[in-house]
Image (cartoon, rainbow, N blue to C red; front, top):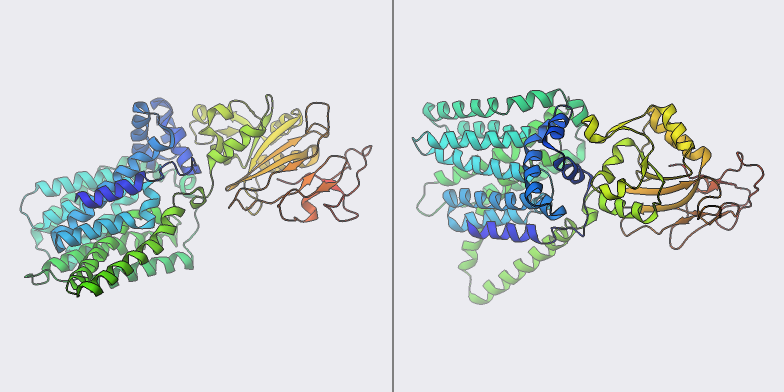
Length: 547
């Protein structure tokens, strides 16, 4: 199955740098994988045990080659190539070589596959492991040799160590056995293998069960859009299964096995996780990414049937049909392929945040993260982070055995902020809710009450704001106008520029913002009177922009 593997590899390497961007989850992988083994072990005892084996793998990768975002994503690219090859192998065994090649190509071309092929997380590796475990499962069905079941147990247990939700492939395979009405001998072999799959990753599962609130506390229950998306994907899979052909000279058994292997893998893991999430939220579609194999297999078989009919057409209709299909495929897939290789395909871009901070930071500046978990934005850029004084930090991530470190009590944070003349604040975009915790409230109140906004830089999924004591925005001892840089395309940022003692002004193409964001209060400095300029309505004063 070299063709699907080569296609997946080429697609994965295309634009792997993603315009030199990295989002927050990848930043966590990058920073954690660069810790020592002892520090990594302490972290896994506190959080992220579910990703422990993956972090160890990435630690080894960076020890061999510290190649930045390319090295971070290369294991996922290779794993996606393996998954495409495995999908092709299953399809070829059950529906013929051409159907196998087409199924592998479908998997490689799916936008969601392309996205996670270039993601520095474990999901592509889990998909590869579950795919090949399914291939070994299939081989075990038609053989009396126990070696296939031993291999099945080993590979699926490996998938469980990479991510615990990989074991949800077990009920999918159980449904396949039930649907195929296999003899008891097969059930016994599968049952022994399934027991091993559950036992081997159990230590990691026990540890991560105690971390579930820290690990998944941010999740909500799946809403109507998630259920509609799930239903639509299942409907496509069922329709493809209905259109898949029987092999020539076959009584339909091979087709039945393909359908009854693929559909449970597509339906059961995601369906179970979403149902459980109604009681305890734990569903994200990428956690069961391997379900896409259950979509690719019947889709490849259906395309094989269409290709067979196409070959029977006359030369001219055949050429026109091929051209139309090629144009349609490019028109549908190319925009998605370009999107998933852009920074806009992720929630944020930590490298863009780092570049923005580097452009405004000065020696001696303080830095605040609002909220504290946004410290992850700079942890993967230690050279930039080291230039700043982290005003709220009590224990570093490495020393505390955490992902983002620990912070000082609110009174200590207030004292540090007031003693710092210039602060670079990294915060979520304005439309995000504010954390109600005492430490976060203290940061916002101190910046609002004792500082003015010097500059604001909207970045993808973030906002970098420079605060300073009144009159200290420019070089020491000189007052200067506050700047707001125009947001980069897709950043969604907006702002206003405010000059201390000179009113507010709009800058460049930045759209107007409410006057409440364009006021600099003079109540703490009554000696300095301000007058509104064209940027603010008459009668409004200037006060710091709340973070």
